[in-house]
Image (cartoon, rainbow, N blue to C red; front, side, top):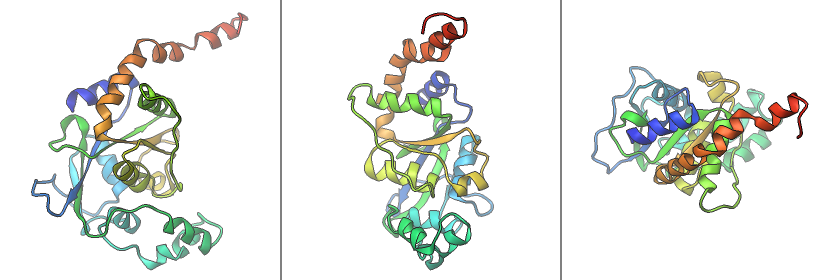
Length: 241
């Protein structure tokens, strides 16, 4: 995993660490990283892992009720399920629109998991289920192209622009076994240091070696050529388009 992380950072120019995420089932006997001293949101847990920390959250110390529900730790509170809280935050025009959004959110089975563990991919002591990366749209673009490098086709992404970290780039890649991209959401942009110009991508870990291998191929020609912008440069010099 150290080599995969190192290659991702080098080839893409990532600023933060790729994050290993493991959903720890109740029957899983393996130890998990230490819990934080206080309560954290799941998006804040990812932020800490991006900076180099290994941590875990449980139903007892996760501070975001929406994320607690997404990860199967606790039922969704009625004030969120009804749409009232999201409407009060100014995110939706009506309780009904917010409630519809929450009904359509995919969630992990209630009570199945005892913890979520995160760590920098480079130093993770566990095999992750998902790898989450905060990156620029250009970097995320290359990861997605790498995911199509052998198979071809088109990609579809799923998001409600709410619960970006817990659902868009964790639950969906874990359950659907597909790469998913998120623009972020109110919660993570209010509660973490994610930059305005960054978005997120979640990658099922079993697909990561293939994607890194494809990035190696893209790094031979496509990535450096596009980043040099030769056609744009020629246009600026009055040359042919």
